[in-house]
Length: 247
Image (cartoon, rainbow, N blue to C red; front, side, top):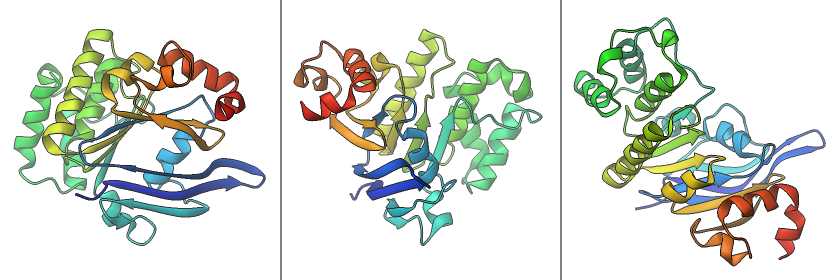
């Protein structure tokens, strides 16, 4: 199968500021890729381009083989997204939110799919509760359920477990792994939690100043650059990116 995401020489500039400086990478079916880097590295800008929120200055994006610039609606139909800052309509109940977004994505057998996700994310007792009164962790679970509604070939996750307690975060990571392996969906996952990254991602890309500085297996990459663990590598990248780039 071809890549579910293919990015080539993607750039986004604002006057004299380069937010994304010519990055290229693929995400394959069933692959979970971590997009890492300090604040301001270009992660969220990249995600916003993939969601069609921002237009790139140059470069190309293909989602499930569909060119984002030429067929935006068709390309975006192959994606879904969850982030702690992207809250769902608070005046709708959990079930209403899932039905609303399911209709937007044209999900077939929608009622059955909603029931499946409510069970998977243990949302039964919140089914008829307005999303706006749920705790941040509960809202995150609803957002993740929404993100899986259409079984997207490409799932974009921006700090998806940031507001969850450790036990729930562990369960959610397993649900995402199960989705990726069972459905064959590719996942692009941003996180500052290096333990989570090592647990979930098969490959990571480290961004710094809008460029990919390094990539590899999160379980071996730190040692390859003389660091004890991925967190130490992340900190070194944030503090001394040029030194690591030259290493």
